[in-house]
Length: 570
Ligand SMILES: [Zn+2]
Image (cartoon, rainbow, N blue to C red):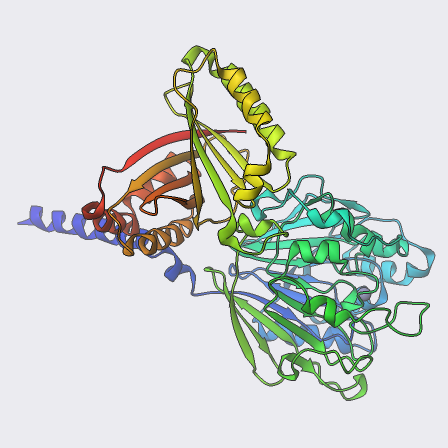
């Protein structure tokens, strides 16, 4: 009886497919992203090993015999690497470029990236050393370029004195930075410290910013008037923690790192003076410790220059002066979910953190409480033939809103297949900011659409239940779904919705999954989803967590699930 057997195999195959959708994270968690801050005594050498197995080394430490080259090689071996796939040289200084020629004799380096050909005469030696290794395999990068490291997104945000002109929207970049108005500025540093290659690495919710020795003035340019990179999970201290010349508060408190790693030396960087002064002008450690939301500070070395201001000894990789130093490293091991563990190789001490991602509300540096954000969700219908006119009026309303204090974001959606049917989702820092934005802009909108609308402008107030990262714009195949959940009062429902949001954001095709709760009716929710394309949305509908949610929520709903499909209007 061959027929039934074939059928049952078919059934098993579809069950397997079903399980695959249910557990995408469990599968991919077999391999983590690993980052090693190799101790090079106040130089820089950061080794990144992607879950794909490909590797990227940023900087190669000092020359000093072959000390740093050997330390990097030992770490690469420990990570199981037979070669370095990509090498970025941030700039042509001894503490970043010095170890490269010796390293290249120990392990093959496949491709190199640098900032270009201009140098000050004093740095000729480091440029020559770099070209001896990379001359025939180098690429000059520009801000806005990406390094093709498989499994990770690596955005070049600074190179050769230029910074990105387009913010990293996928990380919440592009928001106005209110700190700029009062932040301290400083004059330019030496040219080499302005020309830095700086990179932002992204792995899901986890981000790592390495700007090497980029100076204070350029940091401010990156963060003002809008914060172009968004908030980050880990920041490698600028200038090895010598924060008289980097770590500008207007920049640092806008990028709000959750964890800071200082790649300092015993007598260099953190706590150390800038050239030309006796001692540090400010307490560098304190500046870092004052970062809003900071959860951990790790150091490559105990600062012997300012012994009073160091992190907990367990979080310092090396305690000795250089002569006795064994070169212990700090490692971050990052899961696909955004959970990551930092380990001190000296004592095995570790801490686990959960990357926060670029939560919309948290993007507003003036307000650290994510639950204070206010959302207005509005609906209006215009005559189909007047759709372009309505879009123009809505865009004008959006542009005017952007200029108001406390503005966070504004999305206009038009229903697919029903031109003239719009949904507008606004996010403000808090209800006070929304109320204070003035009635003029709203009146301009209602005047502009008065003659073409066929419904009232129906606006509803919401607070945040679960809001994730802002989606990237410019994807014309993306579809958005806005749905309403009206349930009988039940404390289980917010928990279920949060769980659904978490699980849905893990799906590969998800760009946005926000759950908003009515400010006055706690049993009324609006869900705003964006999916990469129709196929991604279909897969979501079929996913186990979606079915589970529907099964759970169905008995509780006072009315059927109302779900409409939209296109975002850019
Ligand atoms: Zn340096």
